[in-house]
Length: 274
Image (tube, rainbow, N blue to C red; front, side, top):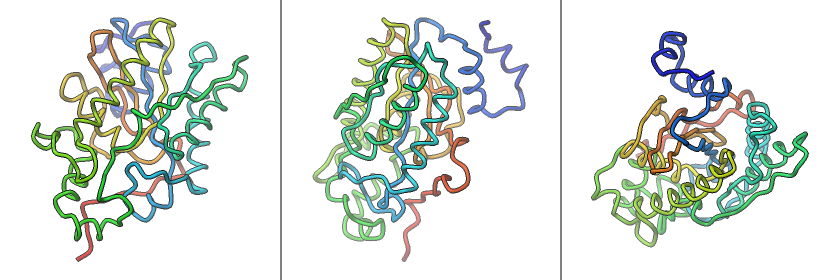
């Protein structure tokens, strides 16, 4: 059954935008116009996440909670995806915190599917290189590199930034424009491959990359979800990507699968102790 957008509004008027995205998926509504469904997961928690220490391109492993979150995320995706729609490959950043999260998802998707799902790492999905900020706690970063800290902390997950801000590089690192260009290229390439096989794409990456995917979608595509929250550890976001490069975000930073001890911490980079 194909749900028209007007019909969906009447039937589920009281539901959140994120819930609408999940209903759209679970009802097996196929994307219109040959669009590829793209599921993007943020890695689980690390000790640096917990301490609000800037990671960026630094390779920090998951902590115990992060491994639990990865397993919960994997179980949720395995439950949601029919056996015949599970991809053969889960894409991942090269950084360990993402690769381990991706491995948990691949293992869960392999169970009962009759074939193994593997992990393919792509450096284009690595976190925003934050240069001089990496390794510093937020108070240290704000004091030692105030302009670079503002560039990161005020813009990493917002839906819109000016072209000038997007093009500004963190000292010793990357600009948002550079991160966006490489991540979008990697995922559109994956979608072209998946579309030919009638499959969806699952990719595990980082908060800064997710922020850039959101900015890309807001700028050139459609928003069909509540995008008011920053992407949490081990959250699930969903996009549609058409052959002509139009993006739609259908759900953003889902964390329903993370409860109890796996619940993500609330992050506030902008509040710095005086």
